[in-house]
Image: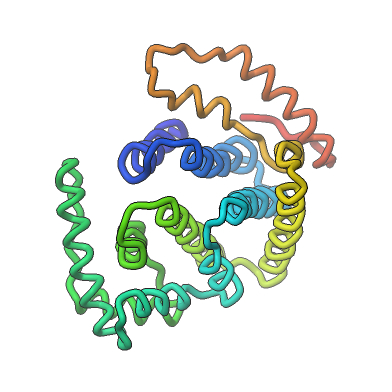
Length: 277
């Protein structure tokens, strides 16, 4: 089931929305790492500290990768600071030169029609959303009463970034992260103390990763990552390789995962060693 989820997500992002290049492959592989680590390490033996480390490191890694590659990460920083997606709404208003939520909802309803037409070419059907629904949505999003769906995140991204670009791709990923974090907070009623731990870890990891990029020692980031996250990136490169006839060397990856497991357990020393499921 987990591989089916990975394939679906990979096909959606790399196969449909994004160009298949090294930068986008990095983003998607690191997002896959979150899914795989949660499913193999945490789904049956939940540990809050491990989850905070996983999410905070992976998000920090991707965001600092963007910053290092001169991609604007201001919207992520603002939303995280304000614990709201209101900065996204304000940016939409600025991009469309609108002042009221009603006027912005009209622009969003037009844009979703464009996306609907684009998706239809690939036999993907999405529902139309009228102006009244968008106006209600915007009010709820602004007041933290609900969160935009993936399709509506896509609409927002296309309102702000009208042409395909690496900034557009990175912006959508930032929105996905913000939406996911707020969803986790609401669904699981995450305590204030846990939220603070997460934010402290994000600050800590971002500083470490940024220093490595500035010192041209980015190869050390993988070593840092191995203490908190299993990196399945090489496995994903083979799994989602365009050459479908290529066979995956399972023995090679089992040896690699066992080495990672030793490092991981050493860093996360506890009463019981973590085991891959």
